[in-house]
Length: 129
Image (cartoon, rainbow, N blue to C red):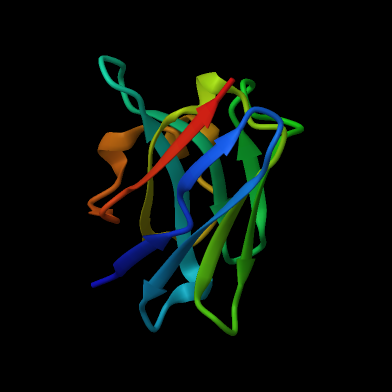
């Protein structure tokens, strides 16, 4: 059973950067599908970046492509979300979600919240204009 712990949220001005961390307690870190989701008040939860740790396949939502980078550190069992050029519309609570995977399942699967059973507690990101 994977357990996830997020950190790294905070408040930043528009144009700034933050890095979120998702530490996974698991013996199978190299066979994980991991997606960062976010949810703003009154809005649905949306996937922003996904990673398959087995081969480092990634994909991004159009709204963050070119600004966010998802990466992994196998030694630390951690997945990161580097967020650059932040905008006020990036303000949301960010969650990492993970599940066991044998291969990259495709972006549609990765960005569907109901496909994940294991979630972190969430971390707030606030971007001011």
